[in-house]
Length: 462
Ligand SMILES: *Cc1c(COP(=O)(O)O)cnc(C)c1O
Image 1 (spheres, rainbow, N blue to C red):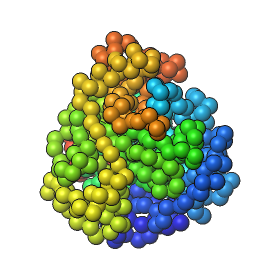
Image 2 (cartoon, rainbow, N blue to C red):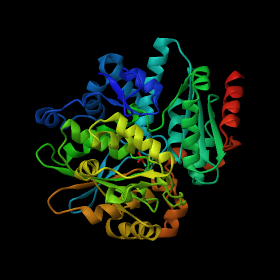
Image 3 (cartoon, protein in one colour):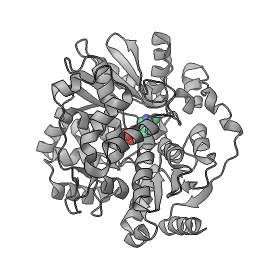
């Protein structure tokens, strides 16, 4: 299995190489040269299997020769061992034909754990075999950072630096990043917003001297191994609800387009997905683009669903790559235009996008109202991201096809917003109850590439 860049100019890599590299050297993102297929019988055979076994069968063809079957089974078992629900991604019913896919039973209470725990184990096995050490730098809008720190903390072949926008993540999110005690994980509070953090990360990858010197590796959602891990729960949930004998729709609260793009991969593999609904908050660049208004950057407005406060949605490049018939030149051209503020999508590509995705948005008031009304209707306390999803799902679901809305985080990660919306304080699970008492460690730093690089060089030299 070979991996190619969305901009068509970087060398083809194996799964392991693409995973360790992150961003391609032409600035593009890696995707599989061909998407493996699962037949109707393959999908039917997933019924009743454990999450781990489904994960093995769904992801195995993407991994190629990079890991043996035995290694890969072992990696999966260790990755999902720390989840506190035996189903890993359980379904709950909200209403007739509407289901919530709970993706917050991992160590940091957000769906990011599904990918990050897997990637931590994959990195460990691969780096051990190679006898290498790498520096992982991540940019986070809130949840990726702690998930990476939990997944990589204590692994001696890896140093981890997480940049987050200072003052723009929830207190629980911040504490989850500033309280891990492992010596190899470091929180950087950057004076800027998430797009600044993400831009500095891209700058570091494009600074080849620095990149080679510190052996830079990326675990942001641009890493295809992360997307791959998220494909699995589309299969487990769809099969639970009757696939492959009936179609299933999904609504996905979206920021960087990673989670929803995993749904696209599942569909391309053969899972009978009807609608893939993109749900955005007031930072609705994706909804505007999918509504035919082009892709034009605005200012990021902080919201109560901060993990979706994004204007430059990095994985959308992958969606564009497929919509443009895998034309890397066309994608590279669009990304050039994006540097000047935005681009228009061609008519053909727009048709391809709207055949695959529909979209909607939720304002702050609508998100709050949904938290309150869903608690009254089903007893389910949603986090603000899940509430954005439920609001948009309700606009798209039908009586014929089950709708699955992805609940991307536990409500206790966002207690202030949940309390304001529903007048209920969401408690942290017992295993995290002392989070507010743990000592915090962080470095405040300016939004400046050379300052960030100098800090990273100095820290790993110690
Ligand atoms: C990261 C995140 C999202 C957005 O996921 P993308 O893959 O970036 O689209 C939504 N909700 C929560 C809670 C998240 O942490």
